Length: 190
Image 1: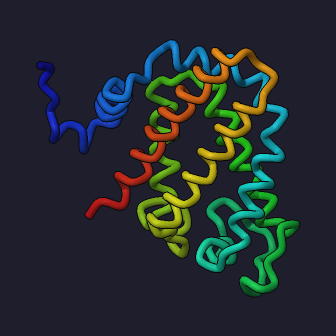
Image 2: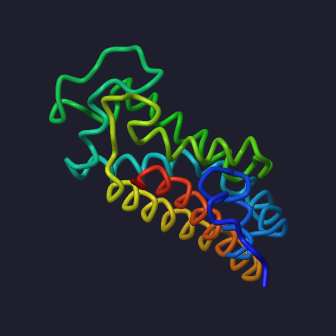
């Protein structure tokens, strides 16, 4: 039986990522599979991003988070939720961030720098980082991650690849998104 230092899981990000990844079976083969999918997924990122924002705009509970100033955006703000449209400059700014995130997921080395980035993705949706006026409730983050997961997995299943590669891809991306979700939810703990 392997000993896990549970206190260290809470304050050593690399240790946490390593443990959760190992527990799920996320390994170098999964990373290689994800990287192999990059050339197939990268051209589809704009459509995935658009689908995410169409979904986010269908609910006031998610759309409302795009009215306050986003961290790093310094352009004009929308007047209110009703006035906010998908072609607003702030939404274009946010879409670019999501596109970069999705590209990084399938191209980056899964080193300490990437683990820190994945952790920041979780943290920036809380009062602990990003815009202090934007705190996205965990239920909304879980809904979003579930949607993104389903969209990515459906996209992989729709690729013109052999069934074995699709299966490996779905499993690898699923594990990766569970790792991401852990690094999101940890920032919501009391």
